[in-house]
Length: 103
Image 1: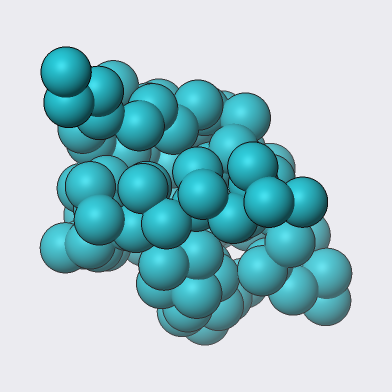
Image 2: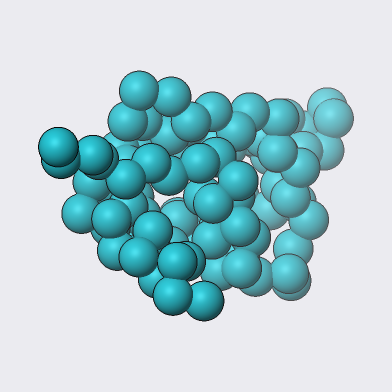
């Protein structure tokens, strides 16, 4: 029987958190992990920091096809909204599972 390794939302959150810089303010309102897709959205202090989020998502090596859906400024509230969508990489999930088991 070929059982496909499962990646939990906590596994992904841990990987993203460990690769995210701590040099800017980030509030996450959506962290959705469902049916092989991933979505993260929220607010950050400066629009340019969206690039840092994208790099952190890429650095997890668990996501593919990372697309920035939006970054927009709300001058009235003095916040910047962001949203990214991605696919979960099946091959990287298997590698992450085996690395976790060996720890």
